Amino acid sequence: MAEIEYGWYLPTHGDATRVNDPAAAIPPTPELMHRVVRAAEDAGFSYLLIPVGATCWEAYMAGAFVTERSRTIRPLIAARPGFVNPVMAAKMIATFDVMSGGRISINLIAGQADKEVQGEGVRYSKEQRYDLMREETAIMKLLWTQSGGVDFDGEFHTLSGARCVPKPVQKPYPKFYLGGGSEQAAEMSAEHSDVHLFWGDLPENIAKSVTDLNIRVGKYDRRGPLNFGMRLQVICREDEADAWAWAEQLISGTTEADRDRLKARVSTSEANRRVQELAAKYGDRAGDHLWTGLTRVRPGAGVAVVGNPEQVAHQFQQFIDAGCTSFCLSGHLHDEEAERFGRLVRPLLDARNR
Image (cartoon, rainbow, N blue to C red; front, side, top):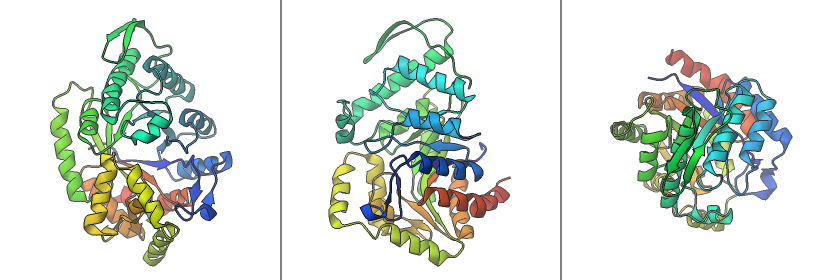
């Protein structure tokens, strides 16, 4: 099994003490982001997920600035199909890697809502975006590993003698992550990703998905194994009652209109559909400490681990035992929750997984 790693989340869209409540919103500022980065790095997180979307600040620029102001944490920044020509994307990522001393990883994202990507000028359907992402990822890997010019004749791109200067510091290239629940996401991870991040689910379902993806991996000529992880929220307090009280407060500002908008927004996302099904089947608690409440009020990976340090560590250990070695986490408020996880939970997990 690979070494266990922990990643945190940079809220470039701002933070909040209640979801969907403008009065409880904390606007995004450079000060907020630097505060979160310092807390995450001090807590021992090794990578930092930088989100993308219409309400987020631009991820590569934000990642470059926070890397300059930090010591070791590694930005995880999206490569989205159709947004940047793959030769330019390869140069951007390689330049970032060299300038930062090998501190960038790549988040493969294709499955966002069609309406959102159309608003940013990308007209491909989700299925086409996955096909485009497979082609663009293959091009970037060729540019990073071939010494001469790259010729490529694909469905979307044709290259003749393309080159990437500089080459990445990380060899053969930076680490790839992918989170998603669709058939296309599974195949993309099996072929190209280094880490497949599941969204919140029961540990027994995660174990089955690990087995399925390992079978798929056998179809492809890969440079290394596919590892697995979880994209989760975390709410930890020294007293369990305080953790649940904070969880309920987070969703107390959401209206039925907010919930209706959420359903429309995530209707084409398989990963979102799966977490909604989990919530519909089990209610707010899919397990004693696995809470689905956030999935009812916001899109994305909203399943949370809630409890005191021992309870939270126990839930994480179940995912580790199911085959997960990477945990991409977030929690409100992001600087405070990162500090608590590092101080209260991480020592328990390190002691159990030496």
